[in-house]
Image (cartoon, rainbow, N blue to C red; front, side, top):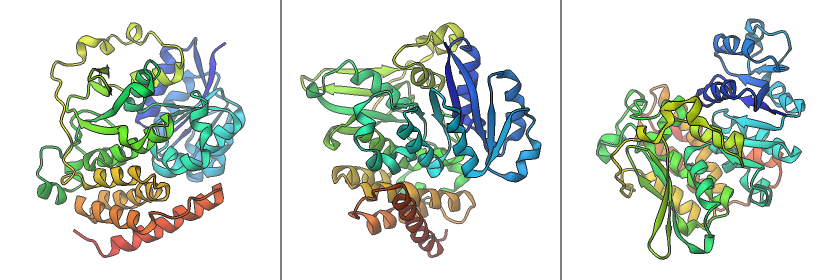
Length: 387
């Protein structure tokens, strides 16, 4: 029996890689539903390859008539949520930003396994989902390369023996700039990632290293790790994705080619392992590269990572949510050319200061209201912070 999969965000970077992997392992997986953004042309190219596909969803009603598909076509947020009614064995959550958190929470509630590529979903709903995330390893399975690596490492280690848990960072497109040069950088510079091909928002988040803050929060919720043990290392070649330092001074690391097929395969097949190198020879270890250097991140240059460490230390859930949501607002303005990197820094820091220490929302409606409040505050900060 093959696993029935719904992909949320099939035309994005993670979605296209997932679709490619499933076509290579069609005996093990079948796509029964998917959602797409604006790239309807790519969606129409994909659907004929998946005979088990029962429904597709698009955000905009105006795009519905452009979809070439004989099954059900849903529209809008409610329509995308209806894909869960197909009762898949697993979903792949690859929607950007905050857009996937309600679907993620609802899938966990229904007992559907979530292969999660969306950091914000867990940052926003981590407190609400609570112990349901860590009590059953298979409820939420990470697709982020760092967390997929940690999952493998932690399963073969005793937590009591671990002194430090490291996730790695490429340093992003601006890593060779000074702190002052980075503050003045625009979107054109921030979008030139040296390694990964990703969506615009996550590429900008990589440049500011805010993404590492989100990944620290994600690791905290996923693996029930104490904040004091979590750390980040800058590793430009990105062939090491995570590492553990044990209390006796020894260490272990997970290495893999910098390609998202590896963590996607790990998530879809968990707890088994797919023979990825048989289908994709370019994933062999010989292509990992030979340069392996690690260094501590410069927290003056990356102030948002420093903010993340502080929020994590204080277990400040409301501050974590403000960190994630205000960044979406800031990056949107950044991509439009209205602010520079310094503007992102100031908006996110002002928002986390404003909402830190708040009582954590207890329901979906309370979380939604909290998100709106953060967005309104962040928008007001932007109006006074231009280039």
